[in-house]
Figure 1 (cartoon, rainbow, N blue to C red):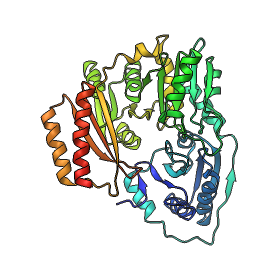
Figure 2 (cartoon, helix red, strand yellow; figure 1 turned 90 degrees about the vertical axis):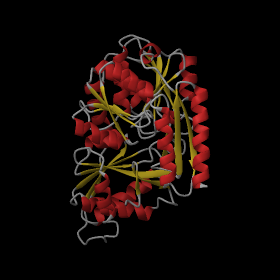
Figure 3 (cartoon, helix red, strand yellow; figure 1 turned 90 degrees about the horizontal axis):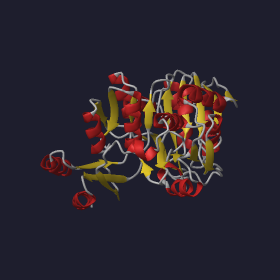
Figure 4 (tube, rainbow, N blue to C red; figure 1 turned 60 degrees about the vertical axis):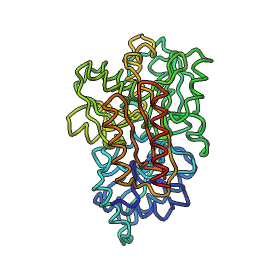
Length: 420
């Protein structure tokens, strides 16, 4: 069992569950695990980023590894540019007081559960007499942008797009990328100050984007999360277009025969794919599991409702900017609302319950399974522990809002009874 790693790396509140000492130990352990080679390090725009970046680099160097610091970079850039190991100092979509450490192997792949266990087993290793180097480079963002534009870009002249950077790692990259392709850009939340990442903006809060799309008369808007591996959209009427809908648009445009999703994916997506003869593979929540399944199935397209969208044709991981460019290309002059309407949407009601212990009792799981058998595919409920926060997440899905809300309330009461 992993003690520190969750769904996506090691994450916590800085100074409490994520300390400088732990980050330095992670640097030592990761460098040893990767053979004391070169570790490429990027970070998002959180105020704690520089000190944690320095702590991790010190850990790498203390056992003879070489740390290469790329500065502020989106997570997918680190995956593309990983050396013997790639590391991102980021807590992704979490609030500014959080931070974390995420890893990619030399091929740009997220570490498996087993590999993370191996890293944890090295956390108590001491420093070595032979010290490595710490270097800084300043061209990583440019290299990444050129690759994404070359592989996923298309002419966007005549398109007016609002771009919400979440005051995160895409702030200096995404708006100019769209402008280089000819789009007229309304740039939002692109002035990070260390404390405003993901605050009232970005993929976790689309209200700013919706407001600016309507006020500015944009054709659509896209929003990234703080580290850039998520993307959600807003159509010209200000309506949210989630990851399931975007994935549906891309699946049809790219004419794939297989797509990988998670257990959170809307039942309407499954119905559309069945109607079009596209095979759907379902995994646990987490883009790392989607990636593993894509490689296992030799498929190129997958994603999550939350906006993790992955196209492996020219990339190694999920990429918010690449997904946004693919979405714009897939529209072919159509309004986004028209393109998204191809997928029927079941009503989904969600609730997050704070808990002390995230373990779900067998009796609770058995009752959930029994209810899903009764629903027989016409609706469903899902109960799962969060991989990043002390929460149990509940999802109820049905053809109408009232039924979904009733199911959610029923399961929430059950969870509270069982977990207290």
